[in-house]
Amino acid sequence: MKTQIADYLFLLNPVQRIIDNKLNVKLKIFYFTLEISKERKMLLAFAHILFVKEGIRIPLKDLNSTDASKPLSEETLAIIDKYQHYFEKIEEIVEFIDDIKNPTGIYTHVKDYALANGTQYRKTIEYKDKDGKVTKVVETDDYYVPNDPDEYVMVIIDHISLIHTEQGNGRHLSPQEAINKLSSSYLVPLRNKYNYIPVVIQQQASAQESVENMKHNKLKPSLDGLGDSKLTQRDADVIIGLFSPYRHAIPKFLGYDIVKFEDHIRFLEIIACRQGGAGIITPLYFDGAVNYFKELPLPENQEGINQVYKFIDKWKEE
Image 1 (cartoon, rainbow, N blue to C red):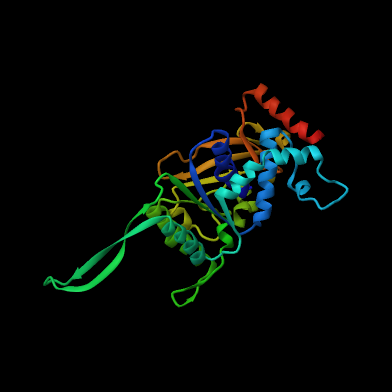
Image 2: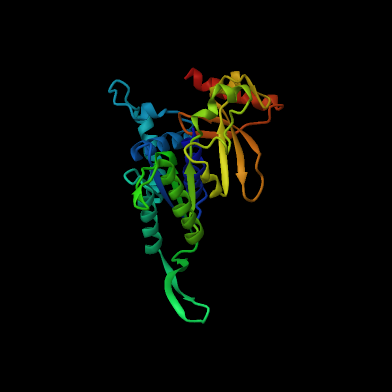
């Protein structure tokens, strides 16, 4: 679920908008997929594009089927071919990386791109004693100028809890230290120095879904519930949480009948934001088979809600 909303917001939608609106936007995405192979990522993109553009719902398991008795129809294969330029655009924009999993490796890979596509200017700093005598001279980075100031570069990490540990300070870092190193020592400089856009997926701690939290209605994602390291929140500009009431057998939530929606409803919340707006919640229709989200009508809009119920029933029947 966390991966799906990240892919929808930061990968599939941007690429689709660039193509559909013929936007002259240069976008580069480094996608460090630590949990899912790049081949599976592309299949998920196939399923999503076929659904959005043609209304064809082919779950990933069918696209990836090796069952000779259930081959894709010639018609479906022709439609896939029709949207080949979408898949080629994804391959052009997105670099799926599944063989670099440690903090320094991730930083080095992205920094190498920055230095190859821009200029890092340096400066000299002199340290003087009380008498004005220079005691130390240090050369350090000053500012960076990209070759193309209109290029947008995103660094997506899915997910940060799967980061491998590495050596640091003369010893092997703990998993929490590796996460903190990646977030504070590497992703923050990529954002601040190169103006890149880090997108980090982080799980909630298992204790967040405990019986005690259920009793006190504290199941929604929260800053206190961040798994493996809570320090990452200090580095983020915006933190988004996604909540599924159906997963916790909650019959009604914020006016919505979860029993009728079943697993097709999610609630996206802005948990924290440096520019304000925290606490805003948006209800979303969700179809995990094709990685699709759409904002729902308000619960009092019964006509709109009934249309969504019909949409859900349509796919149940097929």
